Image 1: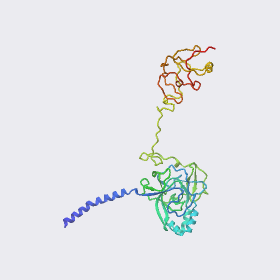
Image 2: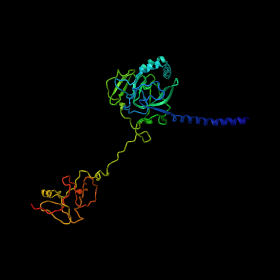
Image 3: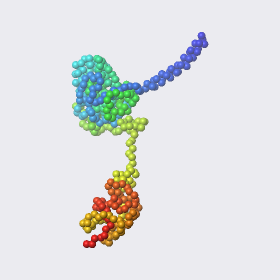
Image 4: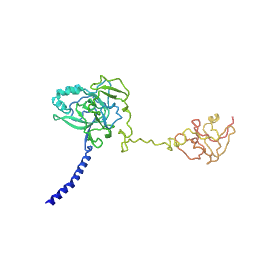
Length: 390
């Protein structure tokens, strides 16, 4: 029996490290809840299980913050937006609604761990703002007499009430209480439900956390106007009547450095890809001439002046071209045309610029209007003719 007990104890010793290894693997694999399902809640929509419906608290168009993704401190200047001297939320109307509905007030208060009678004082300490980033929260709806919670991402432009830590605690368009998200949720690996919106990217979903320091409270929020051109200060627990005059944008409005999550596509490492503009060297232009030849370059005339139209030629009208004879004018400097199939050598520097609508032709052509870089003054090349006596 002693031998049997010894073998069992030895086996237990051998299995103990193996069990510890399995537990460690399970813990590591649980880092970041890859199986989380997150509901997308758009601006203007109360979403599922609303406490009430409050219109006019959201903005469809708002300049987004360039600092998006990951965790952001609630006191970051420019994290939130708003309209100066105007509130986008009606906290007192929400308080009156909850007081008129005790069952909802009880469920609402339980989320923030207060009593229903403490709701007015709790709400009075909140500040109305607009989200400038798609924000991950825990949304607490009302269903069957109690609060029900689920992870949700709120679209930028949604109105919320934030506490003195700068974290969202109320969704204005429905009155639902909000709390911070589960920090183990991975926004990139989660699955999303609900209607999406332009610019939505799981990489830029943001978690807003309290500032460092357990006793840190925010006395003034630095907000950015909905158009993104100016900033202003809003004291905590005010609804816009105490807003400051416009101020310059905070430094946080500078685009993030390379490697910070952005809306643009990345190369798989989090670094945005820079679009590559193709060069135009050697690409034919619309006239068919490669860009190496400047469009204004005029081939040398080698001392032969361009043909002109005299008064006599103008009276006679156009003459059919002929190349069977060689004639030379004694009074004008016409180019010499030889027998059919021959022409003057082409310029050595570059090809003649073709006229509109023509492409590059062979280097040896019979004289024609297409091969002469003259302008509208010579629309038709004159043919050799016998001088007319005056």
